[in-house]
Length: 155
Image (cartoon, rainbow, N blue to C red; front, side, top):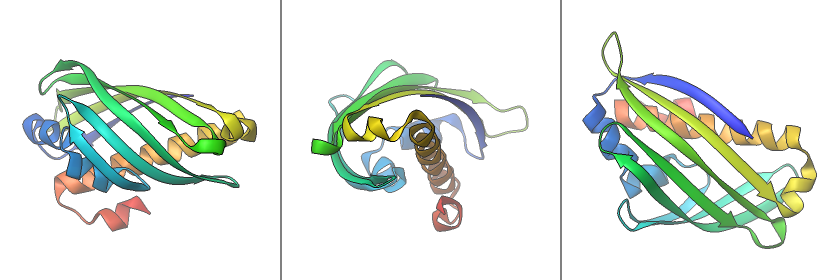
């Protein structure tokens, strides 16, 4: 599954960069995240509970940052295991640019793979679910950074 998108956030790059590297912000914005600990330097450990179609699972995994160019870009990679439900792994290249009319353009290119029971659900369901999760994350992230009500945008 691949997803490419861009959104304009009404904040400067330094503010967005700080939020993208803050465990508390990420925990708040990741749909189903029950726990997130760690740091950008050491990596993060996460516990995320999700329901994909009829399959419910708690994924435990690790997230690392690489190719870090402060306030410009990084690659975020992770893998989570959900027991009998299977696994999910993937990454995203995140790039920040100054937007023409102020604020910051956040571009992300996501690639994800799943295996186990979840993979048996079919690629259309998985792709739809992954897009929904990515959209929810970035909507919540944008609302958090801009100081608007995340509940209105997160659905």
